[in-house]
Length: 186
Image 1 (cartoon, rainbow, N blue to C red):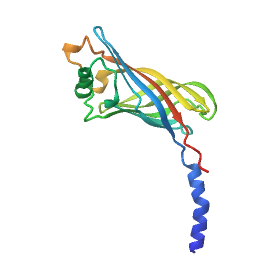
Image 2 (image 1 turned 90 degrees about the vertical axis):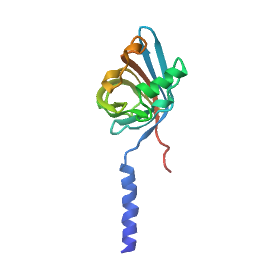
Image 3 (image 1 turned 60 degrees about the vertical axis):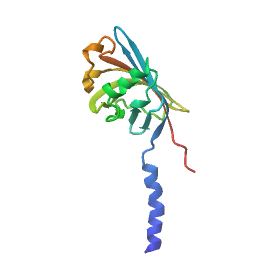
Image 4 (image 1 turned 90 degrees about the horizontal axis):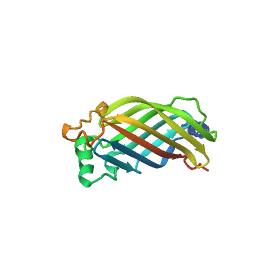
């Protein structure tokens, strides 16, 4: 009986692992924000995002650590961003997770214009979004680029009246991300 169990396991285990989804990891990324207000232009970016992409299912998840954003006009501005606007101690990450709408075969090299539909989570407030993206499928991986707007009030971010001329009500987000396939198993 024990030999039979080992035989079944040795036959079934490879089949199960072969059918398991292959998740591509976010290898390299730049996520930038731009607040263009009448009296001030604020820019910041991070290269510390993490994420996964399942090309077969066309699903994805990306997470951005808020405190990793750098490049503000001053240290005080960065402090206000994290403490007053994003409340980064309570909401340390923003994320976007969902699915590519179009039926694109991400195993075929090429450039594709697609829409990503999912949940954008910022400051603890989740909003369903459809975001236009460009995908480039190449031997080195899948590169995703996009630019989209986020209205700060949709995510419970309140801009005090005294700084409304310095902080935009809509922030532009730019993403350039490269997902790489995991190394093949021998």
